[in-house]
Length: 365
Image (cartoon, rainbow, N blue to C red; front, side):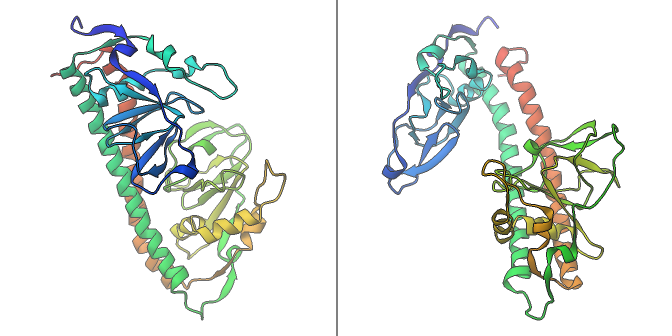
């Protein structure tokens, strides 16, 4: 690694504080406004030429975001004003190895001072190796992004069909009823006290897409229990409003898993398509109903299973459920396969990134 350069961070990338732009002053345009958590709006002017990157300066500090095209750097970020001849994408990945939380200026709101991070000692490879490293990591991110977009498209197709069949074109002759008539809500199941079972943490519940980002094996204490073909949804603020919902088909055979007491479980009754319940739980009308029926203090409101059971529906005849299932089942399997690939590729990227940046693993140039 003798050709790698020892220097300070400011010698590899010069940071500049972003520029104030209140929501009320954003003019209609296609230029993204880059905030500490990503794009917070669009404007008709830019402050920074692409490609470029930002890190959070206020609130969510230190998280790098890459922008291929021109953007407005908001005052909640630091942006790179000068890459000093280095590869922009390499610097983006390089910054992901830093724990900028340790440079918090100590105010009530977490804040990052560019003068503090400029002095960090770093070791930088020559430009050809930078590009090779960025190429390896970008290829993984591109594949992950493609799989995410495929999943979004697949779920969008199934959602459109669900709405067409069960909302837009509902036959007025269908029997009127309530969700509790066709769903087992919070069904009673058992897991041996102290036994080890699959656990789904609320933080791993997806806000978009049907499958969790991860689950673990842990000792059962108490909580809601579910199995394959169930739909799991959060019932507490703000998780319900954020759309935390999962379709369960990641367990082995008749395995029973568990999670928070703040879940509601929708289990299909015999003869009904299990995927139907997931798309119901993602439907805006149903979610609005659940939110409107929350009770409790403003900080800890929740909806009950009994309230959800009262949601009024037109009960679909079995043949319509079967038709939807014939389409939805392979779609969900495809999404699940993609989701496993995403987890695997993300793990690989996160594992090799620090090794590439430290020189422990080298890329042939």
